[in-house]
Length: 153
Image (cartoon, rainbow, N blue to C red; front, side, top):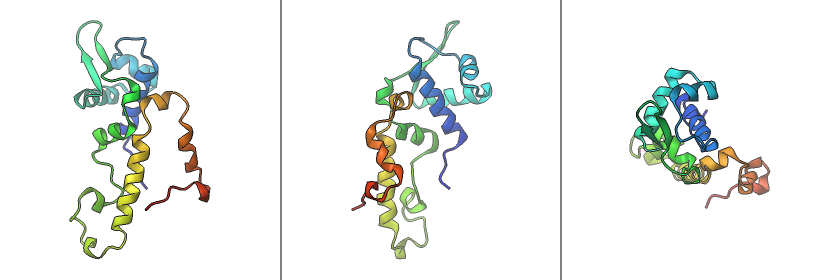
């Protein structure tokens, strides 16, 4: 199964919360934990990571907290996942070429690379803005109908 870590999931939840509440200048870790129903220690840890990775700006002082570093429509989900998890890779040979001992004889390596490109393209086309509003229509074709499947070249 391919699954993001809980930290990445929570990081996206927190960033989406920022994107949906831009009227407030800053958000404290305590307020974010209460508003998103996430544990405060985990929220504090993730906010530090997101600030270090350039998604948030940290503000010190009595009215301090965190704010988005960029507009939500300029933050692709793929970038958040990569910052939290490392490179998106469906298989070991996509992430670290030469590491798999079956690579020299594998007939599927190039196919996995194409699949990985499609996944990255899909994740890169969805932004924080998309998460707080309706998803774009172009995402609908992933509904499972054979005529709507993405064709790999």
